[in-house]
Length: 465
Ligand SMILES: [Zn+2]
Image (cartoon, helix red, strand yellow):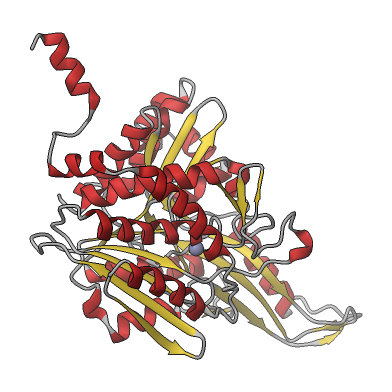
């Protein structure tokens, strides 16, 4: 073979030819692509609005599919109408399992503000409408399809492929909590887990950015309560509870916690640098050094879209004094939506907040149950594989690790020693992405057809390396 032919052969695939390549090449995709569209519609028609959830109906839907394909599966009911479902396609056991985790519940939908009924699965202009079409029935169904295809096509598998669909992610997370409390052995040995938290945004003129979720910040909600003498509004009290509270809050809103750059965030800036004009591109490429320049650090702190990636954040959200204009109340309180980065010690942050508030008479109490944030390294075979598979289908795509501002269930599974990633294979416009938890949630049908193939390839390859 001449050198040009060798190069041509090499460029056909980023992967060495292996039994998995032979397996992938042999699959006839159109029937599976038709099936994913048909099943997506059926799944969206199951109303799992939470509360009350009624995820048992969705678990039974998956149970029927897995039974038909001969895949061992078990429904775990844990409350009336509420259940999780677990299914497994066994590998040869030489590598630890890969878990595909999704939640079956969805948030409420008000049909009045929708173009098509939210539990119809109807298609308009190539997009399928339904609550959950983005969050995350689309991903859940594609995960189930990966097992159905594996059961029919018999890929080589060094890992077990585990499917776990849970109830109640949107409200209290009791589905995953129940599984981990009662059946930790079912997932505890896994090496990797894929769930929500990834998003692949098509940007006008800039290609698609595949965001792979590697970490999330954790809510650390606080209530600040001031107490003092009450009285008639006509006779001001200088150190009344509302006065002391707003003075302390004024100090707080002028302050931000210090910048702390996580390795994954540094990597994120490095990857998105190519989308920036100079001189910003060079600064993003060397973000750690650039942030030592106080002027640049200040400009980043003013950027709402990027600032929250760089530090713990504090948002003042609730303010409550008295109910009557002519009464000085003896109590006033405020609530803060504080979000902390993985690795941060909330006690240390609390001590900083106290110093900034500079009023020891203000009581600080917790306004939620804090779950420590955590993260997964990008330096794993699965993260690199996701990059490779994405580039195989979309060579121009940018793959970047992302830090989520909100919660995902990855936080519950990482403490078991599982590397957890938010990854999905559907590319969407920002407009479609914004329909999560909003009206007209929908998924482009072509993306379902394309996405099932990409996701299956990622899973089949991940199960062998
Ligand atoms: Zn979700």
